Image (tube, rainbow, N blue to C red; front, top):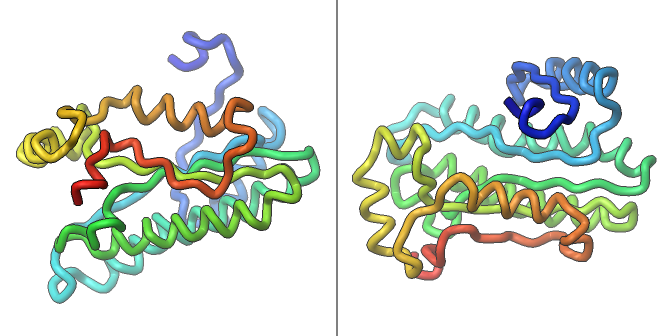
Length: 203
């Protein structure tokens, strides 16, 4: 569908982002098919809900591995070629969860995303001299996602607490990511962009 819509070259690979040998393999295949990575969007995540004394420690480990450590490894693997080519853009996808301590039900997720914010700034500092920019997009409820389809009461609550009076739609997030990947944001790095309709100010 993407190829048909854009006319561009597109390849797809199944990837478990916390599996580092598989990351290495897929990056090599992508480089062979499309060339070196210029833009990296870290979007994969897991979220196991529960309270801190209830959830399995393995859920904590998996959340950190997928939501934070995998992002670090992908940055580490793609930044050298960006440096050699004179620059690149990295966008990490996060959440409002770190602002509210996981709302009492998702500490591993909130902690991993808070760490992702720090990683973004570290990458921005280290990548800056090589024209590599790193930013984060955070969000609250996004209508039409599987999570919201399964928890419609969450969507209703957020609408009532959001200054703009609605939840995000996919295009809101996509447009922010595209902006941060484009030359229009060439002097923006190390920033956390909240695409949440002002909800985070009320949290």
